[in-house]
Length: 433
Image 1 (tube, rainbow, N blue to C red):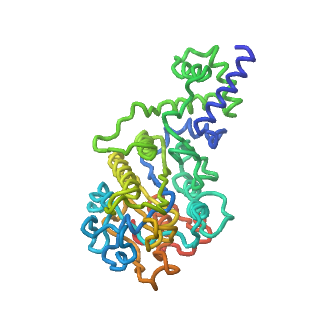
Image 2 (cartoon, rainbow, N blue to C red):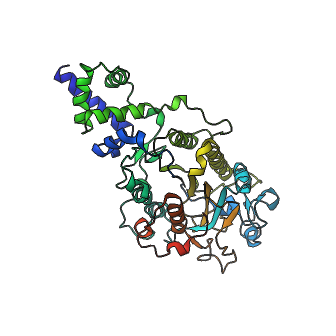
Image 3 (tube, rainbow, N blue to C red):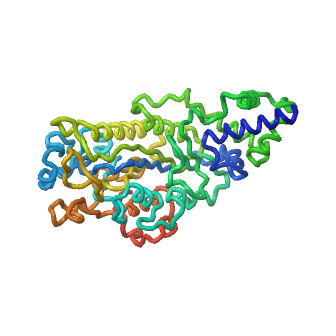
């Protein structure tokens, strides 16, 4: 091949790699981990985090129907007691969360209520930043807490064979929560996680299927190209590409009982399950679902169990239930944890919705979770009990929940490094695990 063709390959190959979200992982560390990934442990503990962006209304998701003040504050949008899926005589799930009820009853799903950030902001941007950095009220922490958790896992210190898929975000760009030194991957869609469609992609495809005797021609070009584009040894680069190519989402079939919702969220969860079951070394996985900012028209018509919020809750619950089912024998090694930047006001507003609040509820599901219980201290809903006279008061700091899961599931012991400035420590844990 002449030099002009080589430069074309480098340009097209580099752009193709950038287009699939590999940029954070380029370099020798990525190549080394990819080449060695097949030797990584197949029994890793995995944490799957789902961010419900826009502030989920916890008072509707898991309704305190035993608190009589709720129906005074929400005369037209509160789900009637008879429509709720009762949990313990005081709390009831929104009917759209029906896919999660069997998991709660089988003690695989837990709810943490009156939970959130002590930062006290009602800005979506600031609240998400504080929750993803794990440092409420501080803008000085630059990395995300999931990135730190990845690096603090004790397994990583013992095992040099780290996978490039150790920390992954599915469905979009790199989230704040995974930014840092963990070299996480942001994968919009596994179906585009490869080099296809252009001349250099076709060349690479043919190289991947060549026999051992293909040592001239393309392999000579490949040796030079990956060295320039990926800055790593060609042999390790070739093995990294071979590993990526082995992930074929087009042929993946979920477990029979796993029925994912249509759309990006369902696809992201399905592909997380695929990566975990493919034994590529996933320790941290992340996905998100937006649209929870229900200022108006939170319900549809006279029935509070229908409308925009119900649609979102249905998509979330169907996705989580499908993911849990799809994980099969891996589910005992996985914990699924939801979060939202803050909750909604206790009192409905004048447009059939709710405004920015403080505390909400989180869900935790999977191996090791002591489910079948709503955790947390209920603060009450009288005017005097509300935070600033308008919001559900916070009684559980989100770092207590995240910290307990990180310690008891992932084995992270240094909570001070995980959450700088957090003084709650293990005494703040709720006994979730």
